[in-house]
Length: 437
Ligand code: GLC
Image (spheres, rainbow, N blue to C red):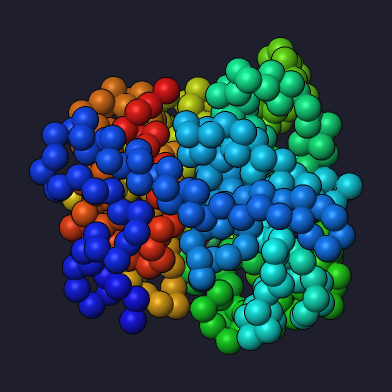
């Protein structure tokens, strides 16, 4: 059993847990967290050359369980790295891009330095069961979004902002062509983990026996292999797919970022695309009665009315979403004590959902615990909606949890106990919550 499941974990045993005591004044606390975040990122850094000669440099999410490169993890790692070492932040994003195909496809997971271990290999979304060095699935498409943030922290490399405009555009075009077959501006995923939220209860009614934690997942992988991972063919042939709110939000965030990197005006190609996806989310996914955004499942595009953090994710689009909707997401949900206003962090599932499970589950993630990236994405928008003290409180309590528990994969929203992998890369994003800007 991993630490933290059976009892309260102590900072001992976590080499990179912050060293200041639990009652340290905020500046000591913040300094300790910053130093520990830098140490954790350094410990997880992997750099080398493949046999084919390609260079890689990335942060693994948390060894030994997560030894490879994951698309959205690396985007978050680069954002965290920019405070400590912008050159590493840039190197990590360039590595994410280098793994892509010339047509613009970027993989969810890349086995840069070691192939998937044989026992897990059939579970990875690879072209063949063994021997491939990347998956054929996508991750939340955050690369252009992260690129803009890292470029903003790169006064020492002004060319970085524009060096990859063409491949970043090809990536967004690939997504539009392959993942929006009905052309409505919303992106479709063909496996639950493509959103990064592998076992979220919102996928239970969509994928059923093919869910990530069930035996049918082997079949989901295998039947996709048989169709050569042609997403349009898979979407046409099978019912288990979903127009995903969070993946569409990430796509719109990246379209808007690429528009700015290209210096586009309001009628620029990617700027218009971001606005179009935001409008589609409001038109098609917004549930006026519940005040939440729901995924649309299968060919019938039926809404999946489960309240998970992704039902709030369009907040990340700021002005592209009407202000009245943003106010409802914050006031009726994020600040609601039975929904998302937990003692620690922002839970991944609303606390009042029957499927909410706040503790550790070896087989299923994203069914309740608080993850740092959720807070990183949503907290600034709570503040922007006029609720600064609530935003501050969430950041402070997460900082306290990190101080006691270290950088864990996720935290129990009831009291902040650290759960899952230790020394987890994107939990270092807490530094941004402490030092915004
Ligand atoms: C788990 C998480 C996923 C993350 C990956 C690597 O599969 O569910 O979101 O990208 O681990 O950290």
